[in-house]
Length: 118
Image 1 (tube, rainbow, N blue to C red):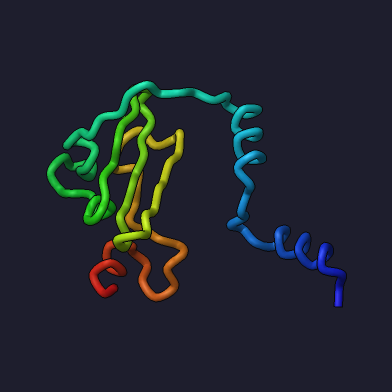
Image 2 (tube, rainbow, N blue to C red):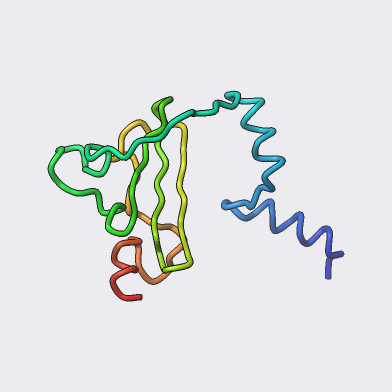
């Protein structure tokens, strides 16, 4: 059996969803795109819709998409009363960029469907 440190390193190498400590994450962000600090946030109705401008985005079934003043978006989903899911990516420019696909739920492929049965 490999030594514990070797085992953990081998798991990290094969796991496509790595946990990155906050210090390392922000260091990587600073080196790649730099950090920005928004000064305000808005809740806009149009960010809650799909690209057609009429259909509600399934990710907003139990959540909301917020827009920072620098144009970036933040999705907060209320999975259970004390469990929140927060999603952020600097590449998302519209609410439609957030999909309902949930790679972490093994039984259901969509978070909104999972919420209906919880």
